[in-house]
Image (cartoon, rainbow, N blue to C red; front, side, top):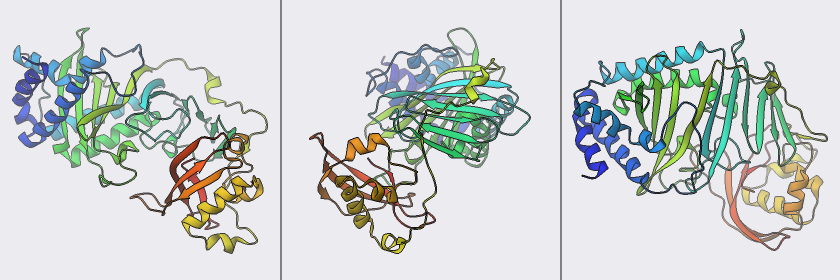
Length: 411
């Protein structure tokens, strides 16, 4: 019998614990995940050694593992209603995480190594992201969030982000890491508390059960289906985890209630794609104090608020397409003072000058908007000084103190 058929037969025995409709829906997606992981992952899957986990394929076939145990007459189901079980598990996890003195969590996500911490692409390669946190008497403690191309450090007073490829620094008084990543595991206790509230308010989307690890430990599993509010045809659909239909699979140590694993699978047409995976977790570990002090390179460029110009009215009156035209014209002429009017920073990075200097605009399309984004996207095709051509969408927005368009992405 095929593995997915065995899973299907056994999972159906769980229907009474969370309701037939919820289990049928989650079953379908778990089966899809199992089928996907009998094949190589799109974009490649680098080998990772887990410090607290086991085989990814075994984890992804969670329903098979737990229900084989059911077939052997071992009771693994949480002995309560789905609302109570999922919500209680998350509340207990939030309390357990809140009691930690420190932790280091490493994940991998399908995101560019130099982009923000939120962007995903279903066909991107995995990028490793690390979180460190040292809890103190203060609410926020000290923390560090790092991927290959950027790092954010909060030393207890301010948060400083260094974008390595452009030598640009962003410094603010805000100490909340969710400024940079909404579901950031630096605040894992808050993530757990939010899930607890969601499980209480929307129990049909959650299911929970127990399984035994290969080492013989008991593990609590909670799976939750999340629906996107972004229309299927929207430009930002599947560009961020929250803008996708996805399945989250949490695994907790049954004794400590500490998070041991988290996987997120995006449901795309005809496939389920693993986009996020917890790789390793170390709790109550000694962290080097130097992690929370960021040494900046010389001559950094700093971000700043958009300022009102003497002739600001001319820029305020620009349409999105006119702003895009003016942006690329400044690049073509290598008029960096003019280009700065579209950038919220103190200087133009040399990397951007080298990349867009003497650019030739092949075409500009009609601007369009996307659900949940306050700016505009302007389709473009350009010919770079290197001879290569590029097609993309310039992201610009004018919700700033000067009310003129500024570059927000798409280069």
